[in-house]
Image 1 (cartoon, rainbow, N blue to C red):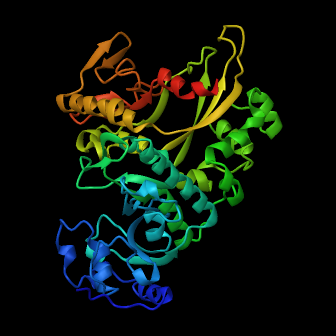
Image 2 (tube, rainbow, N blue to C red; image 1 turned 120 degrees about the vertical axis):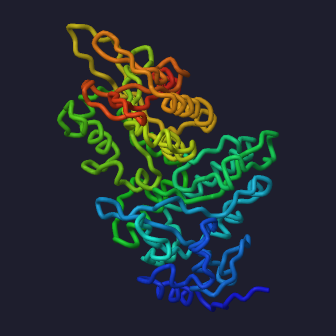
Image 3 (cartoon, rainbow, N blue to C red; image 1 turned 90 degrees about the horizontal axis):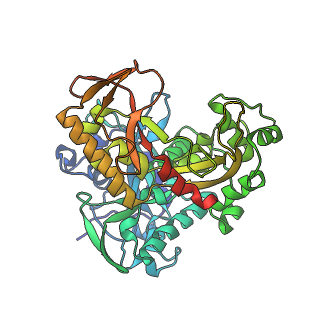
Length: 461
């Protein structure tokens, strides 16, 4: 039988939540849950029982059912810039593949359970026992109108994949703010889906960690984030459609033409491309990563330059590899998985209409943009193959072989699987790092093959 305390209003619940600010989570651990290492939902359960006097439950409806209010307890961290960031995504309710596609957004289990959230932030610190984590802030979360339109689009993307029998190919990178994260004891927790015989990973609706970081900074530090689009635009068009509209007037123009229109001097400086793109978007001088849509959705931009045959001039490089992390971590927590499962990319594409000659400088023209995230099938096949093969090589010891002017190695190269590979980045071969076995190697990055990139952007032809 439930022993829940009865609350008469949301304001009353919020008053109780705010009374905990400045205290530690351990002060509410009336059942010593935090002594158990295996209690994954520990801190949320501690506050349910010790602060709100509620019995722990897994009910489908909201926690404060009479008020339509759901309680969520989540961790934030303080980074080196003294900014707060979310430690992880905010997991909401489990996706029911068999039922959720039958409802409209307004009638959906997601919306009925999560339209009103009471979010309690506590500060996570590596050096502290979890009993000593301080409670920082309690806040009522209602989706603001602009965010809500994007959330609706995200929800529909997930539902459309279920309807298409593609639940097994859902990826967190498919969407902007609302994601379908894996949920279960491990990644092998699977469920039936209604329109395909292929089993799909169990997933839950969740708010991305990038979205939660922006929200935490707004409510705790009062940081305001400029937005590209307004609610009326988003009611009728997707983010990609709106981005394409902003860029459309410049398709076919040379880089120097666009720069002149934007009143930006042409430069080989790395910041030039970012400055040009922000100017095209109408937010000249604003860093793209600070814009609401880029910040909350974890969108990064990459410039691509194609040869006349539609193949990029170069393979696409990403971050430097931490080989010590690579050898220690499981696939779902790896550097490689995180970068492609949770990230969307805005590809800004230029193309040359002639090949390079010794006597002539080339100038590319603007071809278009696309929003891309790596498909789940590629993540779980080619990308995972790169991770697994590299991990095996690291465990056995990388073979470093002197070759003429340099040293080659047996890490997966550009012919490995047609999608991704490992190679050095930069001209200085003396810039070395240590491998797990103590050998020194030139700094390495992971790359996407230029032929694979050509396939992604060929739709712009």
